[in-house]
Length: 373
Ligand code: ADP
Ligand code: MG
Image (cartoon, rainbow, N blue to C red; front, side):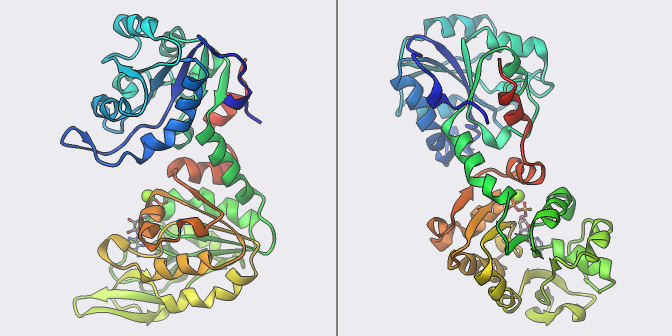
């Protein structure tokens, strides 16, 4: 297992470099949704409360973006300064000024191309700012970047609370208790092939929903009309697996409107937009007897209002007594309004990192913490 920051003894005065995911949406120069910042605070506050000198780093998905708005939010919560530099002379000077129990936020780490290249020299420059390293950025730990992987060879490395809680929360899904049920929806089969293959090797049943179903129907030779199809070739070999369960009733939309149809009767002009709640109710007996349920991916195009299948599934799982593990960026936004979040055993807030963790059982950033000096 990786070492947690709770094992750190006597860090007063120690310089601790912390990788966070502060990649929040910015609107007109302000933080639009501070959720990720709030989630990062327990680790940061723990280090500050123990007298560490904390240096914070994060990326923004907008590579040119500035963390200045994040700093404006953060300084209302903790004692923190900001430097518009990553590891140059300015950053070194500011890092040198950090006092016990205070923090410094570095600029968007992806402004330097060496970050994503996992450049050894860049990792060295970052490492020279600190005595210890902490990774509390599970959502980027599937990336072998300098601030996630490279740096762990240079400083004693530890896991922050958020990373540990994702690993702890998701791990039961790697060793499901029988009878077990995995449910995979979403848009593109190609992004979930590895995940589904892993699930087929571990789970008793794998129910497929979302636009992914279209690939399976196409592979079966069914008409899918004008529906989104991304990788029927990948679906073909999986069709033979008796663990795969496909919904048999769908919602289709065409110029005349939306209606329920059986899977074999999709018309040339139809677009499959959701799984019919009728088909979802058919897996209710499996949900009822399952001991472990894993769910990723909305059942339909919920942003356009086709959300009945997803809502029905969320209610079904929320009502089960199984260990239920749910996650995925869009899965979360599709169910957030249902007020069911605390009805699942664990809700992951990571996207691609969660899929990779479930598919491979670990992540490069987690493995790097194990090999720490
Ligand atoms: P997650 O982020 O939870 O892993 P994905 O990113 O794989 O989920 O997929 C979410 C997307 O899939 C959503 O944008 C949703 O609208 C889309 N989707 C699901 N079913 C359909 C469908 N039948 N047609 C078009 N898009 C769909
Ligand atoms: Mg998504």
